[in-house]
Length: 116
Image (cartoon, rainbow, N blue to C red):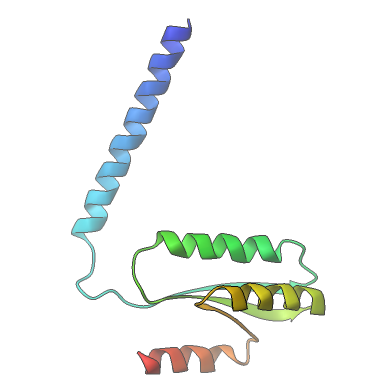
């Protein structure tokens, strides 16, 4: 019985591996000649206990995406002081992470596009 379960697990992992190889080949074939800029915007409002986890997760997600011009924007939609401090600490610790209000967002995007 254990042998059958091991074989089933092996077959499932082989299928997942084959699908991942096909996906990578397709992404390689469809890659643009000149990659663009990527901006990931996450919004935080009120007192959010999960703000740190949200930002760290988004930072890790951006690390997995190829390309050099990537930026994480934490949009302050009325977060309290404690959450704002946490977001600013994470922003200072990680290059490419900005904390801004909705009013500042167009200026950040326009300046980042103009600088590159």
